[in-house]
Length: 550
Image 1 (cartoon, rainbow, N blue to C red):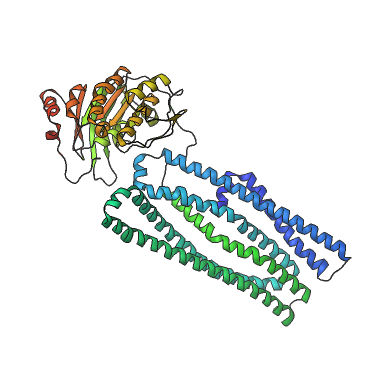
Image 2: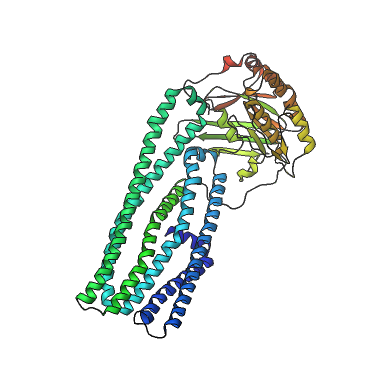
C-alpha cells in the first residue's frame, strides 16, 4: 500500500490514468465472461459472427491489459529512479559523523538490496493491482447473476484469504529478520574485502571471521528466507486448491440445493477459474511487496538528512581571519569530547598541529573544516558568525589520513592547465599520471603517490585553506623534505592558509605557529617550549594507552 501511496503522491495524474486503464481492463475481462455467458453457453445467434466478436473482445482485452501493466511498470521504474537519486542526495547531505554511526554495511545494503527489492516490487505490482481490480469487477458481475451464490462463495473465498493472510504475516516477519541478517552479511563482506591482506597473513583470524561471524549470519539468513518461502508457498497452494473447491461448492449449491440453474453455475465456475490466475499472481506478488515494505522501513531507519534537491554552492568571499570561539564538541555516548577551543587563524598563515593519540587532533580538524557541528561556541569569519555551514566549508580543501582519491580534476571555471602542469612537476608524478581530459585514468599508485595526487586535486580546487592530516607520513625522506621546504612555501606564495597535523619536529621552525592538542584542549607553544618540542617532539607527546586518535 505504501508503494501506491508514494507513487500517487509523486505522479498523481499519470497514476490516475494508469488506474483508469486497469479498471477498463477489468471491465473488459468481465465483459468477455458475460459475452461467453450470453452467447456461447446457450449459443444464440450465428456462430461465425459470434466467434468474430469474441476474438475482437479478446484482442482488445489483450491490448488494454498489456498497456495497463506496461504503463504501471514504467511509472514504477520512474519512481524507483527518482527514489535512488533522492537517497543518494540525502546521503551526500548527511554529516560524516552520522554516516559513521550507520556504518558502511547498512548503507551499501540499502543502496543495493533495498533499492533492488523496491524495483522488483514494481515489476510485480501490476499483477496485484490487476488481481484486485478484476476481483472487484467479478464480484459485481456475480452479484448480478446470483446474490445467494455470491454470499456463499464470498464466505468461502473470505475464509481462504484469511488463512492466506495469516500465512503471509509470517512471510513479512521472516523477511524483516532476513533483512537484518543481510545487514550483518554486508558487514562481513566488507571486512573480508577490506582486510584481505591481514586475513591472508593470519589464517586463524580468517577462520574466526568465517566460522564465528559469517557462518552464523549466513545460516540465519538461510533460515529466515526458507521460512519466508515456506509460508509463501503454503499460502499460494492453499489459495489455489481452495479456489478449485469454490467451484465445487457452486455446483453443489446450484445442482444439489437448487440455488441456481446450471447456466448460472457454469458462469460462476468460469468466472472463478478466470479469477484464479490473477488471485494467485497477486498472492505470488505479495512477498515482493512485503520485502519492499521492509526495504522502506530500513531506508527510514537510516535517519539521513531531509531531502533537498539543490546542491548548495555558495560563492567564495574574501576573508582575513577564521575564529573558533569557545567551540566544544562531544561524541555521541559521551566517551570523548574537546573544548572549549579558542583559536584565530589569519589568512596566509602556516600552522603545525601536534598531539598524542586520543588528544583530539582529528576532531579539531573536523570542527575547523565544518564537517562536525560544535555543541557549543561559534565559528566566526572576520568576527561574524556564519549561519550557513556550506559557506564555511567552501573555504577548505583537506587531505585526511583516510582520504578517498577521486579520479577527476575539478575547479571553479575548469582546470588551470598552467598551474596543473607546474604542480605535476613539483609533485614528481608526471610519469605516473595518465589523463583523459579532466579525468585521471590510472590511479594504481603507492600510498605516497596517491597522497601527491590528492594534493594535486586540492590545488585544482583553488580553495583558500588547505588542511593536511599527517600528509608527509607516507612520503620518502627526500620528498618529505620537499614538502616542507618547497611545497609549503609555494602554497604560501599562492596565498594559501595551511594547517598541517605533523610530528616531523625537524621542520617545526618553518611554521608560523605551533599548536598542541592535549586531552581535548588546544594551546599554542611559544618561546623555549616551542624550541624544546622542535628538538624532540616524541618526548613531548603524552600518548593515552588504548585510546585511538580521534
